[in-house]
Structure formats: C-alpha cells, structure tokens
Image (tube, rainbow, N blue to C red):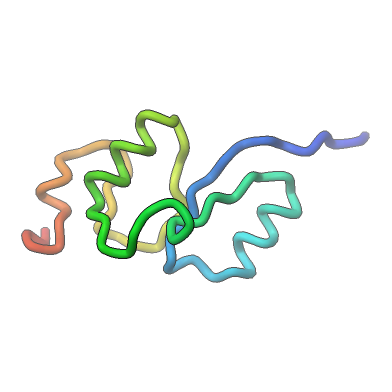
Length: 81
C-alpha cells in the first residue's frame, strides 16, 4: 500500500524540538514555524485567533496555551490557573 503525502499545515511553537517537526515534515505535514509567522512578543490570543481563522492546529508543549478555544484570559501568563 502506497501512502500519499499529507498536505496538512501545522503551526509549530518554539518549545517543540526541531527533530519532532522534521519527522512530521518527512511524514508529509507542512510545518509553519511560529517564529517565521509572528514577532516574539505576540500574545497567545492573537496566535489563537489566527489559528482559528486559518483552521490550523498548533504543536506546542506550552501547558498554558488553550487547547479548545477556552477563555484565553484564564490561560494568560498574567493570570496563571
């Protein structure tokens, strides 16, 4: 069985090891690096809104980044859970 390459885009956070994203690229995912798309001081809310608009998931190890579109203010660094 021959598997076709996937064209799914994934936003990669800065805290994800490069090896992980390289393996996903090898599997056919189109990796978009956060640092290539947004300035370093961009807040999570702006990133999340972009993701929602583009329908692109994020690969992150940040436990504070909202997984399901919950209240972003409750996940901000200024108001830890």
